[in-house]
Amino acid sequence: MTAEPTADGTPEAEPASIEEAEALLGTLADLDVAEHPRVFEAVHRVLRDQLAGSSGTRG
Image (cartoon, rainbow, N blue to C red):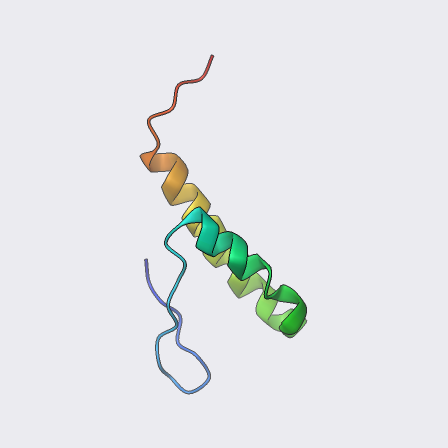
């Protein structure tokens, strides 16, 4: 995953697990609405990557 730079130019760590992604969603209330898409995209990446790597079966 590619980390997006923060306002000061340092890379921001992206969530690696579903739990971390869920916690990131909890920060939305503290963020400016303009920052919400960045959070949604990071969470989407985690969920997509987790599903792509899952070995579950569909019945």
